[in-house]
Length: 211
Ligand SMILES: O=C(CO)COP(=O)(O)O
Ligand SMILES: [Zn+2]
Image 1 (cartoon, rainbow, N blue to C red):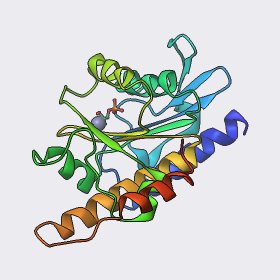
Image 2 (image 1 turned 120 degrees about the vertical axis):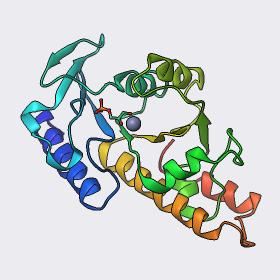
Image 3 (image 1 turned 60 degrees about the vertical axis):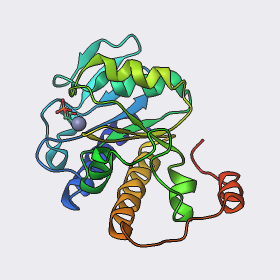
């Protein structure tokens, strides 16, 4: 896909996320890989009203080379591209239910999303919770690097989800899947519910779209 087309797709998918309430105000940021670096939403921009020409461009060394000032979460985005070579896009949101789960002290930080439906297993996989650091802290990037590419989705404690995918559309869809799964988990809280069995999860893992 050409860079111009990718910029248009970033605007369209970001607007769609905003309009459906997955992002509010200037929360969240999205990046996508291009041949000579990456595109990322500008800092303090609203995902609902991006201008394709003003999207920030970062070269392969991490220098800001075009567009508005990049998101302060550039460290966490770059950490995914660095450690998961097939990453084509990264989506960070403050979506309500995933953020709610990121605040729960009762969840397993190494595997915080139970396998309740096939699509969360196929599209999202294991989700880890990373300890809290303030937004934009380079330590967040270091924590993602330390995961050595083992997962494509994390929850930043008391902050929100980050999901990587092979292309922009897949990363956005996986972020939506994670948010809806978190919503279902919160709805089910306090009630007995069935999980997918170990064998069912294994069978789905063999067909995972995101690797
Ligand atoms: O989600 C955000 C911080 O975590 C938004 O930051 P930016 O506006 O710098 O992208
Ligand atoms: Zn954030």
